[in-house]
Length: 468
Image (cartoon, rainbow, N blue to C red):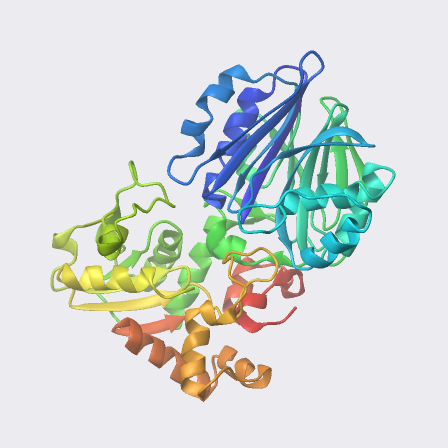
């Protein structure tokens, strides 16, 4: 995934930019960057790895040394950005969020103009550099952004920093959000709606699907009107979104509470305690506990002060042990207890199994597991919450292949996606056996969409049912 933040201010914007980007740290683990512009000193940029250290630590120096009235920045799970570009449009910086499925074809087409791209270590072209090259095929930014939205298969949202203002463009189907905020000194644009509230900005509105705006410290103008069709990622509410976030006016925390309540209404087990896997499972667990009347507790705590989310020391022989070292058990709440543990999802099937084994080793009598979304059966094509292109990296899909003796047809996969079929029941039971859960239950897709509360036609559910 990834997140972005942009500011245009009458005064220096770096303070707001620094903290606005930092509020997106839950969306990425690999790279982060800031780019600013001031009329006196021009452009400046910094990019750092955040794999083993948080954004705030890595960019402390830049937070005091950089100056500018306009700025954009990002947290990225993949490529280094923002990048600087000098073209017939003039100099600009650009940052993007999304996934380009037809990147190779676009690169080959642009290379026919005898240009070049810098290759990354994996041999691929930086997707943000590619977007800049697409925009540069046209005579102005508006036509260039529209052209990029038209030809890119996958998803694309972006911010572009220029000496005259900042362009913000939401993906044509609105798969990722852009929220606009305003205060007396200027405007900001943000992936997360909460990121600017403590900085003194008031919400203005969310951009619609495909909408493109440009803003400076005084004005906000719509350049391309929003489209009518939307497919926003439902996983934003289930997992990616921070608890204080909201998308399309729907609170993440409230949606997760409702999910947990729905899980409880369909359940029959009577454990001693309801617990959530930190952090995204906690709100689901609270909703379940409130609905069921079974107490909520924290049988283990995640120790985070010195363990960034992505950090993994390179002691291969002790890798499993290290992966669990941040989990600290509270034995009085575990020993001889029947626990019901709620997590947001099972993707590859490793982390949750390790957590459950950890609870058994700490004295739990039973560990019932509930997931806040349906089985993940299709690798995301649009935002890449898993960078893998293979469905067989997904735990549920591997179990299906085991049961069917190979990867089945789409027709059979749809049976596995239907919670009322025999195939679905066999899949869930096999997952339970492999993962050593006492019982296992998944959220139903219809219940989950009801918990979001907007028209299901506006929600992307591809990773659960393979439907575009």
